Image (cartoon, rainbow, N blue to C red; front, side, top):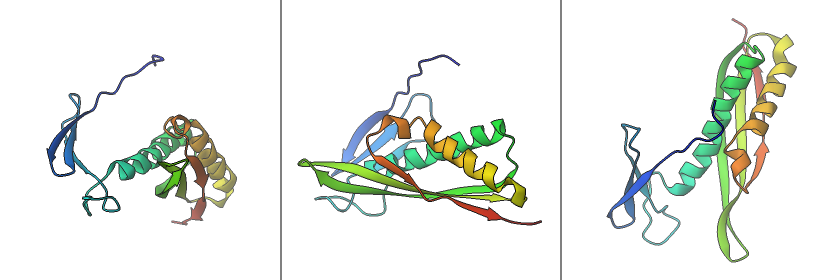
Length: 147
């Protein structure tokens, strides 16, 4: 793997506080709006704030999948909720904190410590988490589901 990668994204304004995200290398275009907490914002459409939190949460999952494979963790399921806290700090809005709530389901109780280790390593290795100033917190749940 090379040491540098580039990801190009374009945004086009469409109307009001709404735009369309696209990339030359992706087929899907995504609508983006000002969130409803701000003037002229819209509800029920993804905002930059949602995408920011989603990027951190999505990176946790993709990193977990790679780390779990490397550690040969046999898991049944992975899911994660995430919540970002937007607040005014030093007269600027910022997402100051993101709480990740991953749930890893395993079949074997003997894998409990390994599962916890894998999810913790995944958060530390997540390139998005490592690229932001937000305080990243984890609330890990490991479930055992016997077949």
